[in-house]
Length: 246
Image 1 (cartoon, one colour):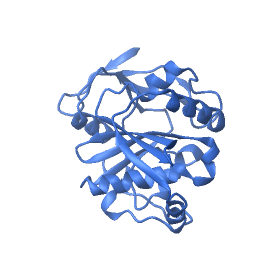
Image 2 (cartoon, helix red, strand yellow):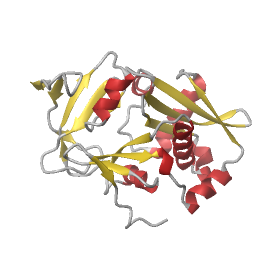
Image 3 (cartoon, helix red, strand yellow):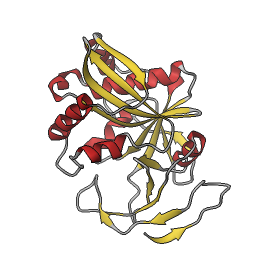
Image 4 (cartoon, one colour):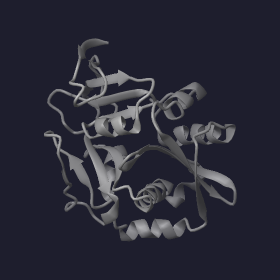
């Protein structure tokens, strides 16, 4: 850790540190830098404040990209009261009419670990930790209020969402699924379920994390409309989805 930054307690509820430059995990041939803090515990209200300053979390690491000459990581959120599923998203909902969702306290199980390991082999390129300890630290070691959405077909687990609960939003942390059920588009289905569940609880926003235009793993988030994006001035503004096909 180098160059500790100490923001005012009136703005951010923790001290931050500047990382060393490292390979960007999203865009090839780019170097990334973050400000970060490792926290043991943080209130849901303070974490929401941090998200409104452009931060996200991974396990107990809270971070924000501060890359030189690059501002491609843009926080995105959906106003739940105005969300309207597209035609393709409604087709996904119909395709998953046999799926049941339950909201639970996050718990690790052999069933979840087995599905997550299969998911990593299917979805990723070997850059994510593939040990059970990595899985537990990444998704089940949370410093804030976190819930788990389990998706089942006939009692069989097919997908899991990890979601943080904050005073005015649900924040989507991660979703993993059974690759044998890829035809269902469960990632789309789970996002719609999260938005609708947020709305039913009177929460005005669903936070989707970073939108990155030139990264297919991150640019899908703008398909949930209307959406807002956090500007460099710290203000949320309506996003521009005019160039996106329905």
